[in-house]
Amino acid sequence: MAQGRGWEGAVLRLMRAKDFTLTVTDAQDVTPDYRRLRLTDGGLLAATGVHPTMWVRLWFTNADKPHQRAYTLVDPDPAAGAFSLEFALHEGAASDWARTAKPGDTIEATVQGTGFEQPAPAPSRVLAVGDPASLPAINSLLAALGPAPATVWFEGGADGLPWPAGPGRHDLRPVPRQGSGAALVDRVKAELPSLLEDTPAPYVWIACDTRTTRTLAAYVRKELGVPKERVHALGYWRAD
Image (cartoon, rainbow, N blue to C red):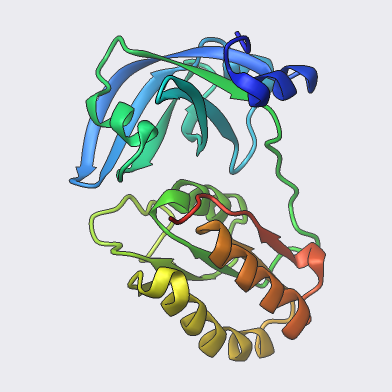
């Protein structure tokens, strides 16, 4: 199944990635720019197991070339062999597919590279930075970390989005996307230091566009001195 996927598919095959065919069973427009699809897993969960923030790579065609994007599993149900995926809709092959996906449609998926380690000691507070693309992972993370309170800086509008572990329980701080992420960086730099002073066992989790993620990760580790084992940072998409 990795054939025809270019160098990325070849590398994943060498790394013994597992391939599956997913089938859409339901589609829901959560907001005009956010869509949830329910899919059967083609045996994925039985073969790989489930862990918090687990993600899969979906394969699309873009200008006749293979194109893959990663998405976090939402409400995985191993007994039923099903899970949901949530798409923040914008321009691109993945969003184009998600906009029109309907029951019966299929998509190829690859599992390789996903993992999760519970921070030890358990966090006294989670300090998360994300956006609609990483919202499923934020929800999965907060559910996995149990009673720990969280402060979430969320770039973009949060109204109407699915926050099962969110605003009612945690401190949600929406930040408009301005200056290609500069507003988010400035807000986090202004507010994070004082929160760290009052948090004996912090856990900092950053997942937004790649450039912003790198900037904030370097700031947290180098300027604020948070140990690398207490920081998780992963760029979820590339800004133009």
